[in-house]
View 1 (cartoon, helix red, strand yellow):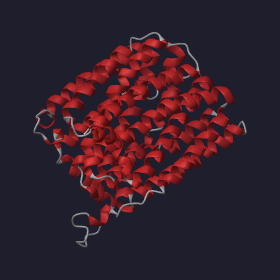
View 2: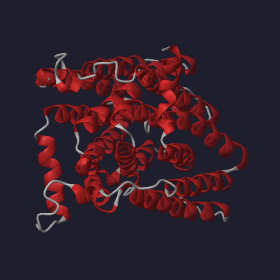
View 3: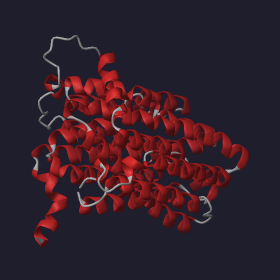
View 4: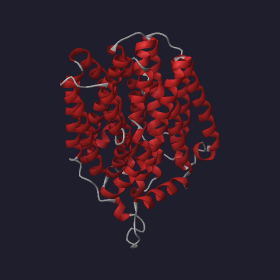
Length: 420
């Protein structure tokens, strides 16, 4: 029994496809984080504008509005093929920035335009990889596999944040981008090593009925499917509110916090980013070890509220060490919350519609660029502390509203969302 418990976190790696997908996700997440830290610091140093910083971070998520279409495409051509093509596009766009940086022709305008182009595709990466994990994993390993997959983002944020800012400080933006492009290329190759499962779209109910299929009809089917699942509606509502009011503080504003609040440099930025990621990694490991032994919906409510409580505390921190400690606790709650959202969605979704469900999941990330843009304007007017406090307080109230609105689907032990 003890040996089984110790082996449980590694059980997903018994699946050959997962042994290729996991390192591909790891390298992609590492490249994402390195790129975000390098470009965020570049914009802060070159322009000194918090508005441009929040604009840059917002453009990374501009593609959330079309994420459901990526879900439709994934359900049609296969999630493996779509994910490989997406990661190849990251390498191309980053290669352009690398060449411009190495030839000293990089400008803030070029950075913003290129990030906007990449932002049309990147927000769907997490959703497509989540659907692919659900495709290749047995149901009994799904919670563990999604938790382990989440660690790729968290470990990458730790290592990517420290490596990206460290390379930038040591060698400059050009050599830092050489590493980013190399990571994207390796991730693309590993993705195509995954053997794609049979196209679930072909086995969908009614697929052989001779009815014409269109992307719009597929998208409507996905939305209708979610509307018939209250637990999915609740999970998506939590995802939207947290992206609108919680993520802006830690996914876009940390370069400003490092420079203006804590008075530190690139290295300090790497430390505070890594602190948040370390907490998120701890949260993922806890769920990975727990497996199916927790009441998913109940825990989602608790961790989401704890997330906001810790953000309220972080808004008051005025020293680097205190801020780092608070971000570790914030990350634990955040990491657990987002894994639980994905598990609840994937547990309730049939194979033929997973891409569309995760596409809608990615669309709600649009709350993040909206929250970032508003935060940038508010910080100029009332300051970071007041803005962060307002965001965290509002989010806490909205979490309570969601818990009450869907309490019959989220709280009872016998509810499907709490099934073990």
